[in-house]
Length: 168
Ligand code: ADP
Image (cartoon, rainbow, N blue to C red; front, side, top):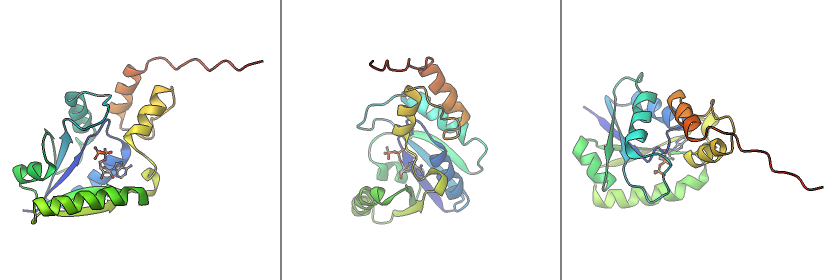
């Protein structure tokens, strides 16, 4: 059985992630989605909520399993029996990071193959951080994130900020 892993912070999961997950799920018998517990960034959502949002967002995609992980991604892959590591590539700007990660991961785990999939046109500009910024400022993200994420963002940011007073 070919098992693949797809690790990310998912703070929060976006339609771009869901798109990559559903396309990758068609290629493998099982796709293990790993939610990275402690990324070195300022998180908006705690781990349990990030995991819940991913689970709710991919519930209809066959062959997908979601679980939290900490530590090295190569260790997560080993634990879940994955021999392929799937990553998404949005723009040229993603390439360098992904190349670095793939090279280091290959050194640590020579039998783990990294597979990069190009983002779909509709989502190639989309990142979790831009979603948080739009939501924080009262913008509409309903076409960019799954419904369970939009609901939680609304709870986090219930009030649209007042427009800045212009001078005069
Ligand atoms: P992290 O930065 O913690 O790895 P991200 O959620 O930012 O987590 O990204 C994880 C993976 O998902 C990366 O491979 C990234 O390129 C991919 N990804 C993120 N957003 C998109 C998107 N809109 N379309 C396709 N892939 C994406």
